[in-house]
Amino acid sequence: MPIRGEDNNTSAVKVDVGIILDMETDVAKVMHTCILLAIEDYHAATSRTATRIVPHLRDSEKDDVEAASAAIYLLKDVQVQAIFGPQMSTQTDFVIDLGNRAKVPIISPATSPSLSVKENPFFIRGALPSSSQTKAIAAIVKNYNWTKVVIIHEDSSIGTGIVPHLTDALLEINTLVPYKSAISPSASDDQILKELHNLNTKQTTVFIVHLQPYLASRLFLKAKEAGMMSSGYAWIITDVLTSFLDSVDHSVIESSMQGVLGIKPYVPRSNELDMFTKRWRKRFCQEYPDMDPVELNVFGLWAYDGITALTKAVEKVGGTAIPKFKKADTRKNLTDLDTLGTSELGSLLIHSMQNTTLKTGLSGDFCFANGELHPSPYQIVNIIGTGQRSVGFWTEKDGISYKLKMNGETAKTNNKQLGAIIWPGESIIAPRGREVFTSGKKLRVGVTVSGQMNEFFIIKRDSKTQAQVAGGLCVDFFNEVIQHLPYSVRYEFIPILIPDSPTSPDYDHLYYTVLPNPCVK
Image (cartoon, rainbow, N blue to C red; front, side, top):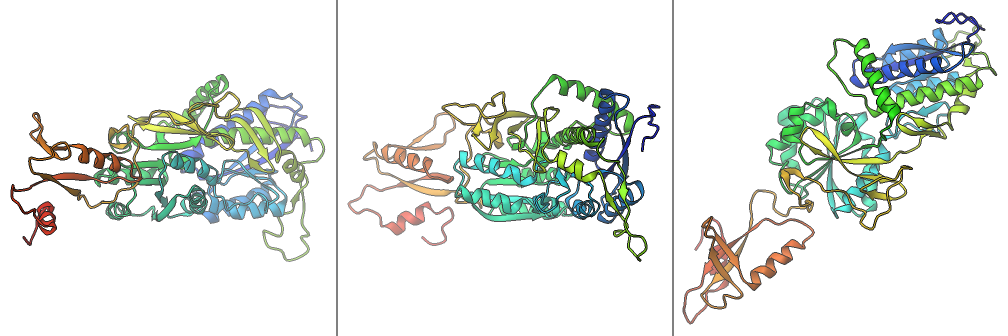
């Protein structure tokens, strides 16, 4: 039924839309501001007789029960025709079920792969699932021929969902995951350090980190303390951290995250995005004047594009159905869930939204295909200083490439490699991924010194450092073999003086000579 809109438009039809977010979090505030701007832009662009979108925000307060209560209130008392949120997967699971009952679309940015679009006809995933990045991560691992990696993930619903998908993606490229480390959000610094020392015994120096910023900051500080941010180590962080790197203290990044590789959904630059970012910053400061500045992120852009897709669906089908609920039979003794009723507009909205494309979305080509957000290219970045430098891209079609074509596919090049990377320890040499000795000991290699056959074995003293340096054909050959091993071996040459006598020393003598602290002679 036509009502009076806020702009005194008496012919506007009101469509109520629910928003359920954890407003204690920065990302929720970012998304909420983007949602408000999307609705305002829709109203500004449409005629005065168009349908008006009325948002209703409910704070789930990081609680599953609060999220469920908010959804019931919005569906039963407000009779919203769509709900954006919640953002947490554990909250979204039950809200999706309510949406199915009431035939109301649930557009959620929750990233858990366990939330199924196929099994829930009124669920639209408003963000990429965390599992969508696993093949891109595996491509990086394959690019450097790393045969073993360790996964470090948060011991929560946010952290565990990606693990089986990431493990499978790595196994497909014949890379083993000998150990998975689950870090509790409540873990102490000592517990984190103890676990890092444990990881340092796993004979691999490649770690994939799937932690939220707060926990990741503590992990990398302790990794630095444990000597694991030095040359020979490789760290890859998932988009749950890379996309929110601005929320990590700059001192932590500069001191303990140098050389880390990160992966995140690629957002192409555009004039529209630049203009929107300026508007968003101004509006965000107005909405949250007491907050420290935060940056606009991809979840905010997805929220804007998702609401824009919803407004297009509302505009398309708004004239074919009245935005109201069909009441349940109240003659029976029913629970709150049974009295929700069903939306007459929801089925039309979900059908329209499930296959929506925004060619000019703020996040790029924004497309829902059967309720799933179409995968975007992933950008690979290298953390240098307090920022991140792009070193390449990954797409499902073409894999890794240094540059991206205008249409979002990776460029065809003869050398499809990543750009120059500064690794931990300011090394420009890619880590090999394995260490045979992780206890700090080096392989001691004896080099005989007899004054004969110097072309094969010779020990010289460096004129600058006064250190003894081994040389000769056999030593050069040994060095070359070591360099071609698929893992790293730390070693040192130990000179063994061979006396000028008719009898050569036996092997026991040679063995005890190269021991660092022999107890038997």
